[in-house]
Image (cartoon, rainbow, N blue to C red):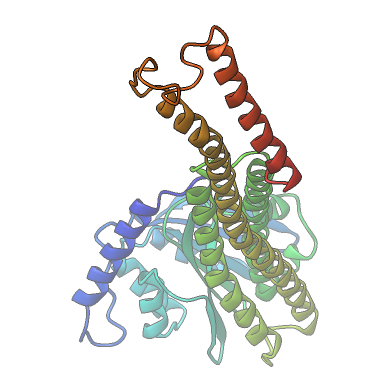
Length: 364
């Protein structure tokens, strides 16, 4: 995947302008992004060893199903419907500041704890490496997820629910939240592996031959890996907050699973940092090899010039117009029948002598 820096920078500038326009607004005020996609609701109910999945339902229909299931998962894809998001907040007693963070989609990954639920924010990636904000609320008997747009990393979790996975059908919201967060973290691995493959390929290309297009590609992948670092490190800290949490709706067994997710994030961070440093080293290597190649060309041109300087001098001297009949000291060899081959022989001997000298000094 090759990023397009110009487009991403434009997008960042738009976000800054949007946030600047909201300066001074009261805390907890929900304002939809004008470019936000329409909200689509889906619901999964789990209990009694079975699960039920409904996609594209109205919010009224979704909330009406809550009482029928011990574990209720409501997913909102698209954040344009502010009234619906506000209603969900009222239904589940979500803090207004947390709802503001849901619709302000430039949040740093974090975990906030309330008395009866946890609020977890992270970045969800697709295989192209594009990220969107994912907000997860979970407490006793419910899990809520808010995405910027349809299309997520939750397909494996939905399949496990459909197949009757015992742990997911046990009806514990903390385990379902773990499964969702783990699926999002697992989606980072193909992206990181793709970047690793790009860097290793660029390393082989640079060692084979230096090309001017390699440095922009290295800068692009390094910038992407810096972005991953900006998302992964706070995600690890947020998981640490969950591991230290003592609430009745977060079981000790589930904490062990969250610890496993944290180990995966640490692995991603280590790989990302290692190959980001490798990319920086390859940029330095590219500059070194480019300079060496330039010096090699300059050395060759210098040697060629050095060889032709005396030859050009001799040709210039013999090319001067003097009358040899006026003096025997005017232009020797010009009247000799062997003058031309002798002159060429002298020039060839000088060139051969210079080449031998350069080889002896290891300049060739």
